[in-house]
Image (cartoon, rainbow, N blue to C red; front, side, top):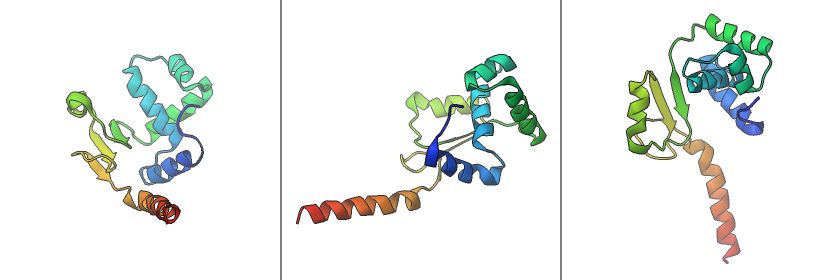
Length: 130
């Protein structure tokens, strides 16, 4: 299946756990949104590179959870020409981004994740210049 791999996948699953969403469910919702509602199950399964029975189980689990609203979380909120407003006007109920790029949609603070490796890098750079 397409989507995040390795450590990124586990971090994504960890962040989405409280919402009851796994990477597989998240990716299903992304593909449904990209398809604009006009995809057949076969087309959606092909897009996701999974078998039809797997897709049916994913769709059933989303329905059982009562997934009705389209929500979006993005890592780097770079929105060209007010595209964030276009997404919200098109039916997106919520748009939240990390604070890696300042924007009004920033709602996920990643400074605790980024600060230690940045400090480590800067300390290595200082020791090399001595």
